[in-house]
Image (tube, rainbow, N blue to C red; front, side, top):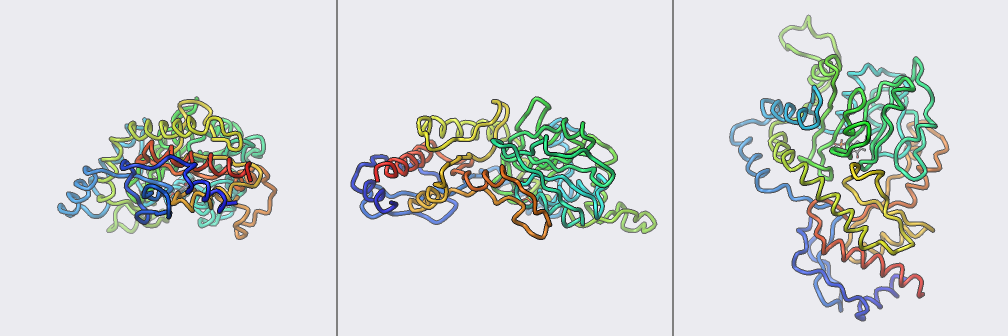
Length: 400
Ligand SMILES: Cc1ncc(COP(=O)(O)O)c(C=O)c1O
């Protein structure tokens, strides 16, 4: 079938060509198809250009020997707290370490059960698992990749913490989890700037965690942030970020175990420049989704996953493909140098978590959803090209 379609495309039934506004590619250079009129740049799954200001900021940090966590990180923490409207922001080396540090600060200890959605990046579960906690997986909703609250048990003495994940900016009901008795640590790694009627995602629970790795709404290569309005949690998190120590020369005050979860000033300098672009990034990512939606509007074989309101948005464009065609479509797009990613497997796949539970919605999501090329530097022309390929895939399918 793929060969069939390639023939149709190469014989000229497919008129679209990518032109010179092709975005800079993060992966290999040109992708050539013999017979196709134009040279086609590959379209990576994620594209972002941090910009000249980020280059200057990083270089200035290095020139001024601001290498470790210091004054620039403090400035970033203050600005970040002010942008999202919380009392405290604590920068960390990654989103994963932010989650572990938040759990530690909230008082999670080995043996505690932690509620976690069965569909998320495995990093969410590892943050709890590596502390010796027992990850308790709960299925997601049938049409949204977030916890199904109706399946979450009431909190109890050994089950006090919940780690809901706002996957791709889809909001989880945080007040509902609190009402069930949980201390809530929001995994908002993919949700900075997305809002529900409860507020800004990441800022509604007891603590929230963001990630600044490359394919996030704003990034510095790596990095994370905890936000909280609790003075107590913030103070423990700050101490535990540097091995529980406030004064290295006062061992009598060494009273909390910790680790090195620290961020650094080079990355903080970069992230300060990205924070200024946050509103722009949000509107760009929303536009990218709308653009895909415009081009795929009449294609019945796929469903572009929507957010619940215009305040919710995510960095990635999720496409649900029914009838077992998802993987064929990904392979087809790859043939044309277009990077699309499968949804993650459900976390029941990680046997060492010891969670042999039935999670049909997470399973279906994981089999049917793919992430289309996204990222703030993706051009409208590339989106149109990707959509024409998708339409071509299904047209050839129905005619073969
Ligand atoms: C939902 C989710 N949680 C946690 C993380 C971990 O963040 P990091 O990669 O910065 O450690 C990620 C990163 O991709 C994520 O997507």
